Image 1: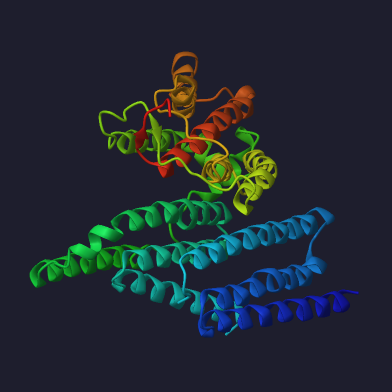
Image 2: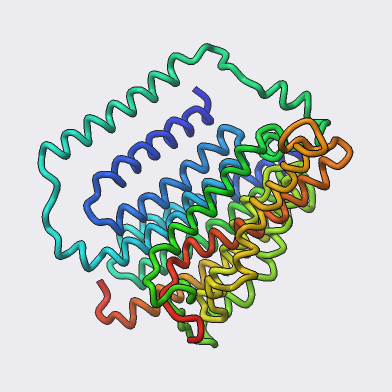
Amino acid sequence: MSIARDIMTIVGVSAGVFFFLAGTIGLLRFPDTLTRLHALTKADNLGLGLVVLGLLPQAGSVRDGLKLISIWMFALLAGATVSQLIARTARQRGPFT
Amino acid sequence: MSIATLFEIVLAAVVLGLAIWTITVSETYSAAVGFVAYGLLVALIWVRLDAVDVAMTEAAIGGGLGGIVLLGAAARLRESEAMTAERPGRVVRLCAAALSASIAMVLAVAVLILPDPAPTLAPTVISNAGATGLANPVTNVLMAFRAMDTMLEKVVLMLAIVGVWSLASDQAWGGRPGPRHEADPNGVLAFLARLTPPAGIVIGIYLLWTGADHPGGAFQGGAVLASMWLLVIMAGLADTPPVSSRSLRLILVAGPGVFLVVGLGGLCFGPAFLAYPVAFAKPLILGIEVAMTLTIAATLALLLAGAPERSATR
């Protein structure tokens, strides 16, 4: 059982790390604010979600697992709101740089 | 070399690099952003040192609230900064560098000549944990064994808010701090400011309550409550209270006030200042912590809101 759990963790966290890496490369390489936001939100939403998914089998209790999921939910909420606000400001300022 | 050691070496190198970048970068705004990232990484170091209480405070204050204060200052300085092109002379800069380097050297020497194992009171703290009925050693030190320091820290917070308020102009005195935030009442920010606070307030109270046995406490809980209040203010759903408000001032002095009353009670009816009677230690500490959480939340939020600049009626 514990080997199966460890494999789930390794797969989940590795996939999450991949999305964080891809998101960071996108943030550094993409040309304007909107595409950079697009890259960043992939890291925040999917990357963190997969890391949390990978950590769930290691949680000591249901309570700890629920805490992990709620952290992801708050990050989703904050990330979505902040990227909306940044995108709106970038649009109002005119030509993207 | 284990993976943990490798991770720690990389973390330390990144923190040092980021610190140097924050100092050398020329734009104030970039330096503020660098400082926020620095605070979050230092919090990770505290986690690696098993100091979760410190890590939470560092992330909330160093990375979060401190970062907003610096970003706000950078935004205000942006216009005047572009005009003043003059830089301090070579002699001034050399003197500053020499002074900083010697302070760093003295600190490094002080750490390096510590006896090994370093002197510690940790076993004494653990063995006396039963005296207060709290299981978290950090809370025990903060609220009982070194309660005097914590009380004075709250007085410092009060002095800080007095300092910020004293920047107000005479006309604005007694008015509301900071600008009036206008946001689309149907926009995303207002939505977030309606959705998050119910959960955030529960998390803040949970952090205060769990501080008795687990990492957490008045400062961490207060920081979460402060950020919820600021979110509602920034979304334009509520306004900052006028600084002449009596209830606001009562909240601001509640923490140090209750602390002082309990301390004097210990002096009158017990052996020493801040000596808690063993039977009532936990309820007394909890009462002080609740008052402190309110004070910390109000103080942190108002430190960020800034000096009064609008009359109370508007």
